[in-house]
Length: 116
Image (cartoon, rainbow, N blue to C red; front, side, top):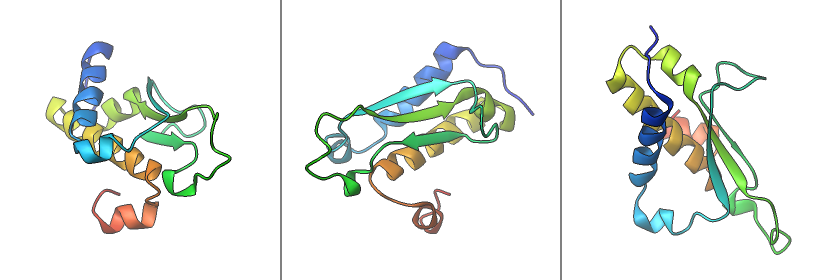
């Protein structure tokens, strides 16, 4: 149940998912880099990962910090999908899920909202 997809096409899907974020939220995103990697070396089942200081946790000491990162794991997502339509959906869900962590939304709340 694995899909073949070029790196360029996958990157396009991540960009499309980011474009789906409402403009009012996009304007609030600051100092975040979105990366695409094949898989997480510590947790090969992980689809995405937010690393940084959530917007709700930032204070006056945050200035000058390195960018937060959102990493989307291409090969892991492709491995769980049966076709391109599933990849499109999973990429969108994963990107939204990780952006939500940036805004301080935890796993429990994401599950309640249906984004778990």
